Image 1 (cartoon, helix red, strand yellow):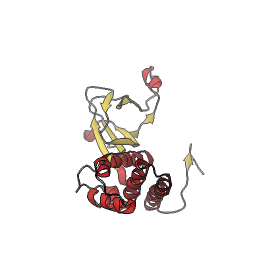
Image 2 (cartoon, helix red, strand yellow; image 1 turned 90 degrees about the vertical axis):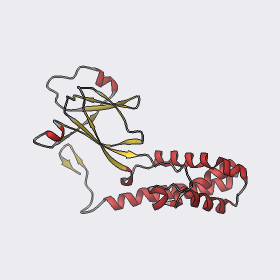
Image 3 (tube, helix red, strand yellow; image 1 turned 135 degrees about the vertical axis):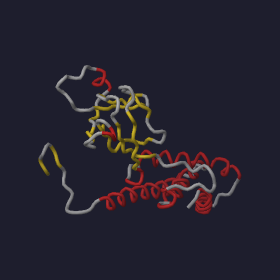
Image 4 (cartoon, helix red, strand yellow; image 1 turned 60 degrees about the vertical axis):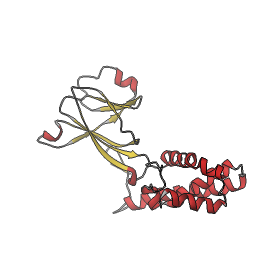
Length: 211
């Protein structure tokens, strides 16, 4: 469904077609998308991106649609390396990154400061490869759609209905549609877990031990 179709459905659910509601609809969509971006981290949002290391710089801008890391690796020598193998970086606090790294410690580290990615150590020719969760693309025009509106339009519809009820100060309607919105989001997360899992029973590996 596109934005116009979601708007029509939400108005029908709420039986509201007044001009005041139409004028505030963009704000409702923004609030719903902000809630979804906070709650969801699914495979459908995973995007791979590569950042070349330039001149040994430590700080790099994050993608504008960045919604959280799923994986980050440092590829020594980049694509020109004879062995194309990535080294998974370890998250560290900004305080740790500011300290002197012991000479024997060859592990790579990263942190995020002021919407910038800091990586250490990194040298000219290396390649930072990140897999991150992309924020839900905003629906701004009537014919706009995204993966959420196409695959899970109920989340959008019930989310918008929740905001309409809050706007109308209808506590009963708000509680009902908020519950349906949260149920839709939970269904998406459950579906993502089922879709990504295959094989035997899931196991967790901790320090070489499988539990």
